Length: 288
Image (cartoon, rainbow, N blue to C red; front, side, top):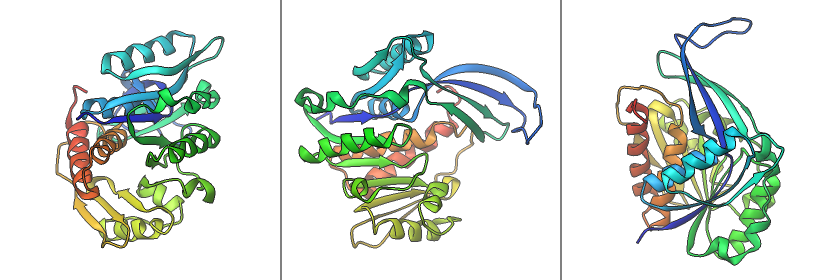
């Protein structure tokens, strides 16, 4: 059966700029083209859930502007249930500008806009949780929103997956509500793990963060990933070699696919394998 996942998170109108290289400080780099793209970690992960075969139900906010209408249209086109996405009049939607270089690497700046004003009130309604088997959170929304969502999930016996991006300190009370923590190498280090330079150090980072959350996945880019669940030995999965077109959105593709696997009853290892495969296809697919 198609699992239902509730995604509480951000929605951004992304402006993508292609250039030969990322600008250094005080440098004006010349780009080759730009184009709009649907974004925000919450939105991207909701779309990834839908593409991976899950039923994605999203709670978030957009502004009453052209960006907001674009975001709603894209959610609908992807098959995401956006009934819990609020439109705030007189406010600007979240947006970002990302520069992608010739090697497919990128750097971005986000403006959160209405994502800072998400109302968690609808989470008190049972209809929001009908059939939900997993809650997915990220850190592009206020911590109070994530905490309210996690508490509501715990009260209903729904497990919580947190993609702690961007990284910030985990309040112990909130951490106790997280069942699965997903971070990349930089985020793992910022949260107290040793630097991640390969699969062994990713496994060590997962074990370190596993002292806080029952299950942890640490992604290490082109190296692959490591994961731990309870007292079992760490899982190490090497990355699939692919030709990189762009890494933009790869992490969200991974998280959304991982979440569908876990919500559908897959083991952490099997869910990680499926998610890693989806992310590999994502970074090599110029049509996405």
